[in-house]
Image (tube, rainbow, N blue to C red):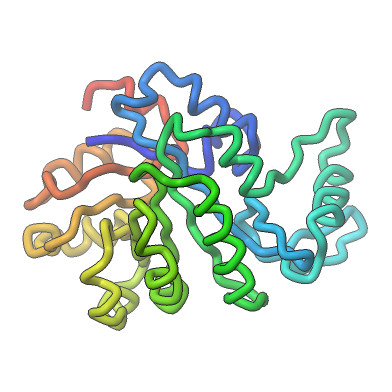
Length: 245
């Protein structure tokens, strides 16, 4: 079983930043028990794909700014001012990350839904992936089956995988069969597996669950029927992979 660095090495560095991603690349288990880096994608007002989790950011005056309504430069200015340091950690854009990683590990790209035109994000993402030429080392995921279904026909020529994220069974149950048959993985909240332990035994997909940060949970998941179908676990505590469990 392997581990995926949730938003990078987020226990030691600001999440979804280049330092957090660099720390994963420097981890002694990269390429072995560390399978890759997970990150969140959002589209800005100037059509940049920013690596950010939240749909909004607040400035020091308390004004809330929707990410989709601000340029990447504006977002970076707000984030830098909030950090109150002479060397703020910059919000990266996806092309920076692709250049930095350069196929050295797998990337798990979670597309966050939001108040933007989906086709603009999809078009930009497909263009960047065409340039990157994935080698089976890109997995695109989302809670939105609509986003994934829209991307599938645009990326069949690329060597990438797809995963549906869910924290309620209804999300999986309502996903169209045309999507589920093309998924490489399912990404359930680990608590769903613990509450319904027989589900794994019936599952026909490989599973990568989120977000597991302690040994007790790891052991509980390992004991489930069908636990061999758990391909990897996302974690904020990447050094869990160094411990015997």
